[in-house]
Image 1 (cartoon, rainbow, N blue to C red):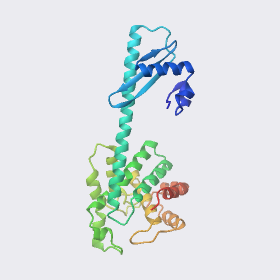
Image 2 (cartoon, rainbow, N blue to C red; image 1 turned 90 degrees about the horizontal axis):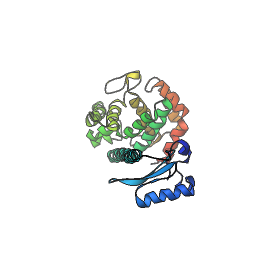
Image 3 (tube, rainbow, N blue to C red; image 1 turned 180 degrees about the vertical axis):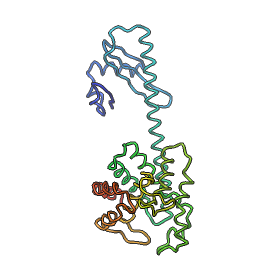
Image 4 (cartoon, rainbow, N blue to C red; image 1 turned 90 degrees about the vertical axis):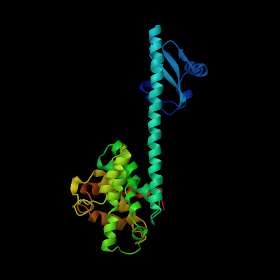
Amino acid sequence: MFSGSGEFERSEGKAIEEVLSDEQLQACQQALSEKTIVYRENYLFAYCCSECNHNSMLFISGIPKHLTDTQRHLIEIFSQNVQLAYENVQLQSEIEATQQELVFRLSEALEQRSTETGNHVKRVSHICYELAMGYGLTKREAELIRLAAPLHDVGKVGIPDAILNKPGPLTDEEWAIMQQHAEKGHLILKDSNRDIVNTGAIIALSHHERWDGSGYPKGLKGEDIPIAGRIVALADVFDALRHKRCYKEPWSLDDVVKEINSQQGKQFDPKLIDVFNQRVKEIEDVLVRYPD
């Protein structure tokens, strides 16, 4: 597949046969078979490889007709650096993909302790992304919240099963124990050098805070609550209300929308409720993609 910039920017994703002329394709094939740099009148193909990545081909057009030995040597160094940079991007992508898979798998394992399904964490994750983008966060910030959101209830690993899965109302003492999962989750995840885990620690601690200050564990109010926590709080409540739990039957979409709107400025950030109302169809679509 072809990836390029400048005059080739619109050719990304196409097969090279669709992009290159017959003469250029021949030069490309020669560079590939000989594993070298092939120069033509005003362009070149450079074969690039490394020990831990797939091979690739670098195509540069607009070069001078006559190159000195120094220029050719600099081109060789440039080609090697391009391959190393490309490899670093791929390795970073692989690391992030691995982190994401581990987050989902560990979160799903945790959910199996309770009566909630593993898809709960996936739904909350993607709902958070919709809300974050609608709120005006950057794509990177929205993606970070999406990746970290499945960690929001990781502290429940320290809550006894008898409380976690109790079908009826919790006693005051049991509720106090249940509330500890926010700080327990923060303790598990805090002080990480990884953005995903660090964001997960913030979310774990703050996703039960309320806009009016009546939440837990710190009673934060308004914008003192991290935006990631505010977003996960809404996503988590929406998904919980729309699905069956050990203590309740699923609510209809209309009833959930009505309930969430009734909490504007109380439990939830008012601006976030406006975003929710604008994107409720996209949010509901997430439930269709990840059913119980």
